[in-house]
Length: 145
Image 1 (cartoon, one colour):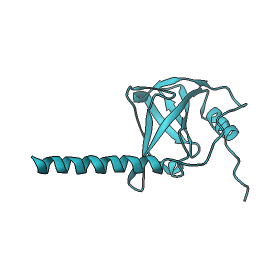
Image 2 (image 1 turned 60 degrees about the vertical axis):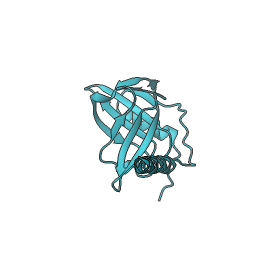
Image 3 (image 1 turned 135 degrees about the vertical axis):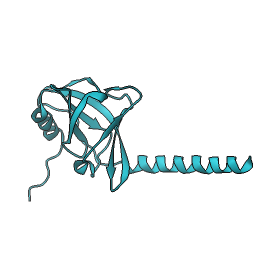
């Protein structure tokens, strides 16, 4: 029995270490302004099982098309430099309905490793273009080459 408990402790320790490292990998010191004077967006919720497409609009913002005519802008808890290169995402949470600050998260692969990003804000927008405009208003412009 002692050998089993030792293996369980080791597995628990390693799982905790992996979770901690994954959390640290998603942490950034960069700040992104989430206030806006641009297009209207209201906090909202969506059903994760109805997501039809996604598009990273920035290292912290993701656009979603849900159903045939619903559009959402997700704000993540930090800046994820590999997010613009994500080819697929998974959305998970305690419930299938995702709202601001419900603990739901996006997961995507970066070089074969999962990256976990907490969703802190969900906003209904009129279109992908409206979401893009909000992102432009909320982020610092990149220097021109």
